[in-house]
Image 1 (cartoon, one colour):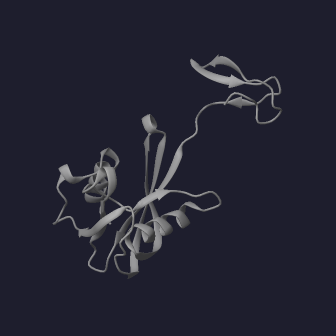
Image 2 (tube, helix red, strand yellow):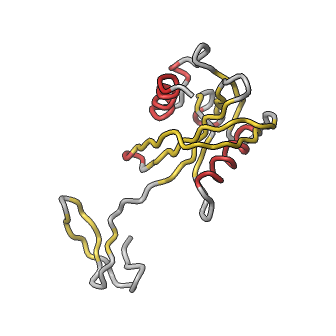
Length: 162
């Protein structure tokens, strides 16, 4: 950010707590601490199996949990429900907050909910190649997981119970 969103003046760099920030005479401070919020769902079917998606595109074949960025004017819960449906075709309800994960290196916050699948069928879409259900007794291969956050979440699901 080059100009103050409050008054339009040029922002000046200053060091506060060993961090370079941008500041304006009017009092505005740009702390440069924005993050992307992603709503992620661990959705369970009636057999207590959790749903994972196999991705398309540059991460083709990798497994992760349904989820994605929150849109403006949308609650995190609404984002979780929408993203799960968009990526899987499944309808969920009974959302409960499970855990929050952060990746500061990519400015990402994962807000993870557990939910129940109440209906739907897989619908092909631009992000998901296919879906699969897993359980503690039938886990995906670690090498097929999308990345660190998926691995951490899977570990916590296994060790924290339902």
